[in-house]
Image 1 (spheres, rainbow, N blue to C red):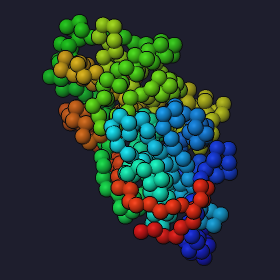
Image 2 (image 1 turned 30 degrees about the horizontal axis):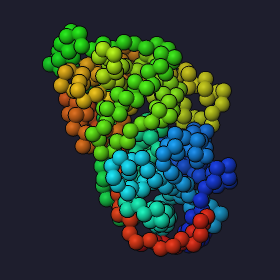
Image 3 (image 1 turned 180 degrees about the vertical axis):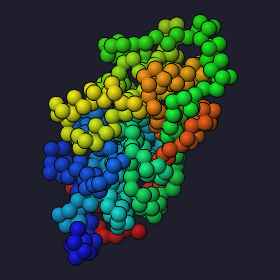
Amino acid sequence: MPIAYAEQLMSTEVVISRVGSGSREEDEFIRLPFRIYEGSTHYVPWFDASMRAIIGRRHPYFEHSDAEFFLARRGATPVGRIAMLEPKRFNEVHDTREARFYFFETIDDQAVADALFAHAERWAGDRALTELVGPQGFSSFAGAGVLIHGYDRTASMTMMPYHHRYYRTLVEAAGFEKLRDFHSPYLETGKHDLSPEYLRLAQIAMKRGRFQVPVYRTKRALRALAEEFREAYNDAWSEREVFTPITRSEMKQIVDDLLLVSRPSLIRVLRSGEEIAGFVLAFPDLSRVMQKARGRINALTYLRLLVAKYTSRRFIINGFGLRHRYRKAGGTAILFNEITRVLKGFRVIGAEMTQIADDNDLMMANVTRLEADIVKTHRVYRRRVRETTVTEGPDSVKMGTWA
C-alpha cells in the first residue's frame, strides 16, 4: 500500500455498518480475512457457504439465541469486522447476562479495534447485557479465543482460529482481561503413548466386561446414534462453566459437519450396556485443502477433501466426552487408549487435541500423564459493559478513536 494512501486511510474516521444476508457487506465481511492474512501459511479460512448460512441465520443457534454482524470501514475500505452474539440459552442456564463477540478481525490499528468494541458495548447495553466475552462462537466445536501462543503452527481447520501477534495487544489495550485459556497439545505417535500402568488400567477395565468399543463403518450407523451422542455429550459436560445443553438440531448439524470431514471408523464410541458412556472424535487434518480452496466449495474442493480424508497423516482430536458415572471405572483410560490405537492403526504421524480449557482438571491431568507438548494457546477475554449511550441509528454508527 503506498505510504501516502496509508496515512490518509489512518486519518479517516471508522464507520460501523450492519451486515445483511446477501448484501455487498456480506461479501466484504467474508473476504476481509483474506486481505488481513494474505501471505500467511497458517491461517485457515471458513468455507464461504458456512459463513453465509450463519449470517443468513440458517444455523441451529438461532433457534434459541440471537446475533448480528458488523463491518468497519475507513472510507470505502473494509478494515475490521465483528459478530455480536446474545447466547440466550446459555444465559438462562447459568443465570448470567453475557454478550459474546466472534469473527473478530482487524488491521493492526487500535482505533479500529476500539471502534468495534465500542459498538459491541453499545449493542450489549441496548440488550441489558452486562459483560462482553470472546472470541466465543456459535458452537462448542468451533474455535474460541485469541491466539497467544503457537504463531508458527497452522490452525486446525476451523476448530480454532489463527491470529497475528498484534491481536492480543489490541484486545488487551481495549481493557479486556483473561477469562480462560484453551490449550492444544500435540500427540506424536509412538512418543506420547499411555504409560504401562495406565494401559494396564484400560485393559483391566475392558476385561471386566462393563464396556465395549464397537466400530461403526457407515454414515447411516453414526447418524442413527445422534440422539445418544447428544445425551452423552450433555451429561459429560454439564458441570463445565462454558456448557450449554446441545439441542437436537445442533447435534444434527454437528453430525453432518463431522461426517463431511471425517470417516465413521475414526469415531470411537465407548458403550456400556444400552447407552453411550463416552466418545472420542478424530478427524484427518484437512487444513491444507481448506487453504487451497480459499473459501470456495466446488467439485475440485470435494475431490481434494475426499482424497485428504484417506491420505492425511496428521489428525485432529476435537471431542472427548465421558459420562460422570464412568470416570472412576476406567472409562477415561479406555478412551485415551483408543486415541493411541487410532493414531497407530491409521499410521498417523501425530494428532493435535484442540482447545482444552485450563481449568479442565481431568483432561489436563491426562495431557500431563502423556507428557504432550502444548503447541497452541488461545485466550478468551472478558470486559464489563459500562453505561451506554444511544446509538446514532440502527444501521450505521460513525466514530473516531474510542478510549
